Image 1: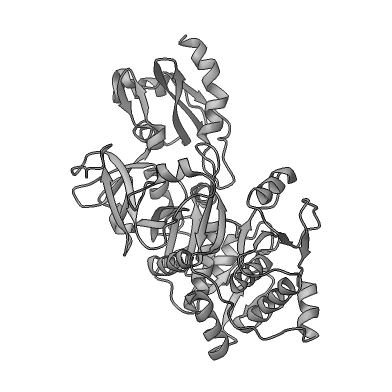
Image 2 (image 1 turned 180 degrees about the horizontal axis):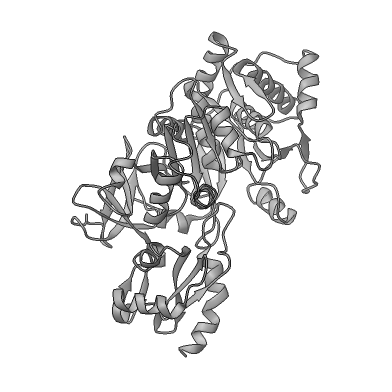
Length: 490
């Protein structure tokens, strides 16, 4: 695996290059390697061997990185979960993935044998010279390196195995897409336990860059960016909203020296894109992809100037097509399903043949998103295929409905979804806003823009329900409103 080979080469040739830093510590590649080897020995002494499954559950992001690298070096399949929330959910998730041990800095009992790892323990092992020299273990490229539990935004969360070969290809693509260079510094606001944040951190180490990982629960972003001279910052939409609110009184972009500000994880409205360029960084890039496939498209700042809702163009080595229900390529401007092909895509969901058949067809991955190709050759996002509303026999794309309010100066978030009736679907809209906003005014706006296709129910919320990844959960919204709305139209 190129990541491990590159990491070992840097340790040998430039051992004191900075690998990891945060508010409390700076760690060289040599020191990081020592911690990793200490954990590898601990895992071997505990009876773990290549292809075993291990759960990673950490409060400390740096320790989580050490555990992640040790698991890769030993050839284990790792499952990572975030802290917080009911312990029963974590226990069920680990059991579902059939993990053999849990490696953690917590004391929590999850009913699975736990291996305790803290910095003090590792420091004592290293100072006592309790390390052995290990060569890379014999690992099959088809064996799973990561087991990812999907977000479950639109239904039952699926388990996605990412093989060692696929992980290597995805790490290489991440490094190339972001143009990560040796000695540069990258920070992700998404917690390290999330797959995408972890993968991008590994991409930094693969090219000899530095990973910035928070140690405190809520680090001051200004200190991380300025003091550590960050080159790259990756955020989710929810972080973008927070940053724009935090810097709304500042004249000009707060982080003007950033080489890139990557935003992904869920659709990014035109309003948010504009505010990010004005308040955070001019170098806003919109990333599109999936856990199953990795990053597929990137819209650079220049691309965003010509097309609204653009996802940009496919990354190098990625094939992307927009197709109709019969699998025929759509004409320019025609909405259809996105399908993807490229190195690193997964081969099947675990223990879910039906979902695998839906997502994988004839070598293509169907992420379940709708788009069209613009005249300039860019991919224009149109929403989720399973969110399309069939109202009185006419398709309504929720993204079209959401766009109308997203540009309203007082609206913060908006979500459109369907209330299912026995013979029809009713379009619903919920929103959050700052200040006074009358729903009658919004209804009039929709009537002007959409006519009879307008939403039949508009409601204001104080806060949108979101999943762990920060995405608006339309599943929860349907549960909150559909029953009462259905009674109105019965």
